Length: 572
Image 1 (tube, rainbow, N blue to C red):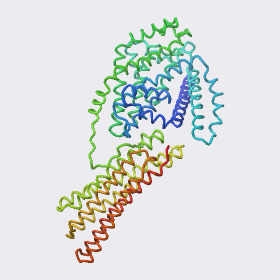
Image 2 (image 1 turned 45 degrees about the vertical axis):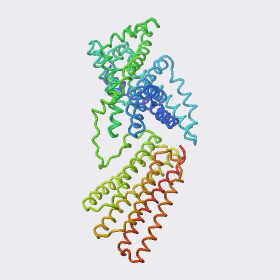
Image 3 (image 1 turned 180 degrees about the vertical axis):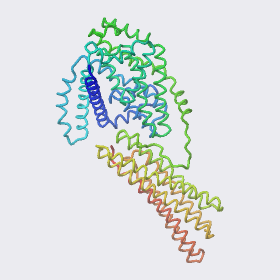
Image 4 (image 1 turned 180 degrees about the horizontal axis):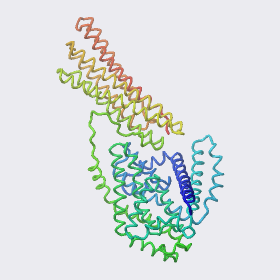
């Protein structure tokens, strides 16, 4: 075989893998569109204990046929604060089991039935769905076409790899590494890891491994070693996604790496006895050995089944062993990856450009970040009554430094959250409900940033009042402090609304608090006018007083604007 033939084979192999990967991605993306919010609900609610978490991870990965997608989704939920680290570890364990379903589909259907023949008619039936005006029907069409492309790609993959008996020189470089005992096993573990990192899909590497074994290129033990390598390589996807995430996302991704690497280590110690046990089962049930002559068609059919058994049993046993140590794993990764963030530095806590997965999940992350933005702004609200009673310039300047830092954080959070929300709208398709939610969120963060601006303006008024040696009567200060309490009450109500389901909030409590703020403003306005008329207050002092209670009233109005924006969002 000449160089041109080898290059042609490699290009055909790459093209077949590309089609296979595209089919998986199309199927996974469409499934997330069809059932994204339901999967989100399952992930969120069915993780109350470690066993439910395992089942949930298995279920989600089985449905979307991508452990990488489900793991990144879990990392995103941890990043968004919707899932604890220990819950995420159990879900990732379940995802490892769920990803073995792909191997079974390929082993049971891909080598025994010509799925490409069935796939084309299925894709033809799905074609009308692509032109539907309904998002869900279009996604169903994409799902069926993705399923078809997956098996067409697998068929091309099988045809792209020459039969080892007819072309013994083609894979001579691999054959040179298959008979070196444990060294061969280590080498093929590394090859499996590297291929999975390159392809960013353990399913694609698994398909390639099964095809190589089916075509007689690799013996059973080397195929099993590649499967172990895929378990390590697949953790890289989650760790790459977590690089731009928060500390919790990094810990969850690292826990995934620890879990899979530990499993590979203990399996390498028991490797050949474990394979012999699987081969004993295969030989008893089919009459042929997975270690038999690859030229025998029955042996070639048995090896993919044996690899699927190996893949599934390994992940189930590894999960059963480590499920009892989820808390210990969580403590270990928390000790390794420590939180170094400080209170008065800018940081986004829940969202990051690199982790956007689906529009539904992205809006959940944005919602959590908006709550965090409100919590940062609340630190300014809490300082307001302190400013009214401070009688020390040093303390006043210290409060001012804090107010300035929080105001700058608010400005930068507004910019970053806006950019993040804009990135969601650039996705090919988002539902009208998601679009409405994004519009409301953009308005909400703008209003919260305005609250921060007003709080900082409040400080500057107090600073100017202090420098001009203006003092209010005790009864005036008391009224202002009451107004400040109303503002805190209004802000707390707004925080609760931001954390709740947007479409379910009640505006009545906010309206009642706003009415109290407005009544207090009217009372202070009357007091200011009467004191000015009775020469009990200077004109300059009256101006400062008017500016202070007017700022309070404006903050109250903005808070209620946020509540109204939340109420406009329809149910998804």
